[in-house]
Image (cartoon, rainbow, N blue to C red; front, top):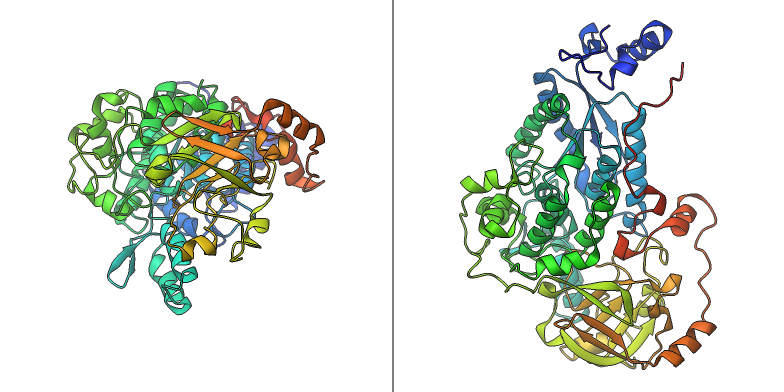
Length: 578
């Protein structure tokens, strides 16, 4: 058995399969029970295929088929592909939120990559948290890696109208509550909304993070937008299988792809596509694993020059299938031109701008030209600061109501979503259109896991009056498919003693998005008095993952990673076990 490739360089996998004596025999012999022949142990690159598919994660349920395409490409290029499962995080099913387990997925995948005889990895993701979780793991181990996301569902179709996953859930819920839609019609619309494999076809977090993987250079051009059932996705997976073998031979690692310039590209592209606010937390966490200097303020500064070009739900009218046919992400990259670092490297071996040079836009309603955007520059995700959010908060301007971007109102405070929904239908609730709903204890440690509960449905009393939006302030997150004037990720969170914990009913709160401020109009002396009387909520669990998570999770402005996972750990070969 050889332990080197044709260039004489040591391969990681040969410490297992190229070992002599009893150790090598044990490693090889147990692999043989799967029917592998001698030549797979000849020192060729061993490629792991991390599959986050599961029937409990509907968006990712088809990834085993994608893995088969990757394997074909690996075999073609002379590699040895080995599929392995990683946690499937379906935001659609998991309680209290898949975000509670993003860091656990990242930890699990990191350890699996490090502990096994892998020279490179193809990451197969789909639903919201699987994409950042796997990118975090790849950043930590820094093995040659690339990503293929599972792709969006086909457009939803209901009575001749395109409907979007998530976005129309919120809309239909309001229609039913307002008596404009029957329960039977709403039930029928469910099957019309989700009619193929794939993740949300709106520009929710899943689609956003697929685009971020492509923008960062970790996913091949166009792969973010092809529908899950499109044959081109499987062809891209096969090509990626070939490419990862080349990346191992060329020693191309995530740290050489996901540079500061790549993150700047991702932030600006996120602004142009009207992407989810959740991208802020995930990009911060990935950057933290790499040691890239990235802060919350970078998202505001870098996005201010970028208009919203993509007319997709929830900010616009169209869906991911339309985006694909209009030209995909390379067409957006081409439109942004010099706003991006076009020479930033990608996993394809070509710079980000290479695909853009030949990209064409086939539908100017979907992808707007930069001189005629959907929304002007400076209307993307804004970062707010003030005495209510000393470490920052964010608001998605493109999903907010313009008349509420500068607003002052009295607070109506709830300590949990459950507490709010217990009274949301009460016609006597002391609330009006100017009220600022404050929802707290929904942050990383507070809920735990920072769930997507911030965009609580409006009180029935206001819906009956025709009110369609109001200011909401929360330390939790909002689904990328959602909309409304909702201040998110308020940090520090209430559960660790952030100012949100000190707000009381009737306090005046000012939101001024153009000035980037969020202000609680209570004097410092009164706040100190309230702080002295405040006590932290009791821990939600005294065991297992939840305890570890709550004790070690960072705040939203630092990506909500675990403090001991920040920074790359490398892919050193573990000690010999035999």
